[in-house]
Amino acid sequence: MHEFAFIFAGFAVGLVVGLTGVGGGSLMTPILIFVFGIKPHLAIGTDLLFAAFTKMGGTVSLARARIVDWRIVGQMAAGSLPASLATLYMLHLVGPANPATQTVMTTTLGLALLLTAGATLYKVLRGKAVPLAIAPELLSQATRPQHWALPVLFGAVIGTLVTITSVGAGAIGVIVLMLLYPALPLPRIVAADIAHAVPLTLVAGLGHASIGSVDWPLLLKLLAGSLPGIWLGTQLMRKTPDRVIRSLLSALLAYAGVKLISI
Image 1 (spheres, helix red, strand yellow):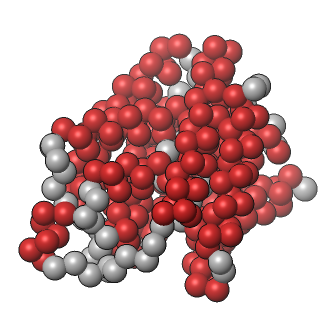
Image 2: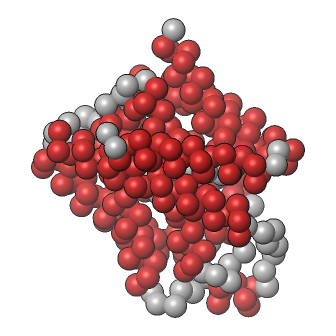
């Protein structure tokens, strides 16, 4: 019975990700912890690989459409990947199942969910349709940050956050990119964020697997549900009021965040 519940959970999260673009980590990790009683370190490690595989397909289609700015992805990854590896090394030293580590994970996860809730609500209130097209001469300028070190620094923060909590590569990443590249059209920002999330969650997820923090049978069940869920979500995206769904999601994430902090 549990097997079908995991597949259904994967389908539901995939559907919401397809509808709204909100990262699966901010939804799947709290579900695994609260609904199924999975240990936080296993929920986070499994969810990282879940996110990597689900976002791979999206990155391929976005790359084919030529709206991924790989220079931005590279700048963010230059900070996020080393930070993720350093965080994994620290987790290996102290032990992911250590009670103190579990407390740090749940508290940080709660704060990350509150940040994601705020970022999601910000996009509801401030989001507006932005044209995808941008003149080639303006694109080069729009993909240049105020200082080369800023994307690397913010990437390092996101890399650490994602490795500890599996949350942050989605809504928080989009807000960071909006601040760093204000002249870049929103579809290109979302595309860069999704493309950057793939190597980051893959490195962090494989790192968690190496320290025993991934439940492989659980991962397969979640993917079995999420892949058709994402496909259906993308089909329904244009027929559903985006602001209503994002507002409800924001409230749900805030509730989960408060609950995790109070554990």
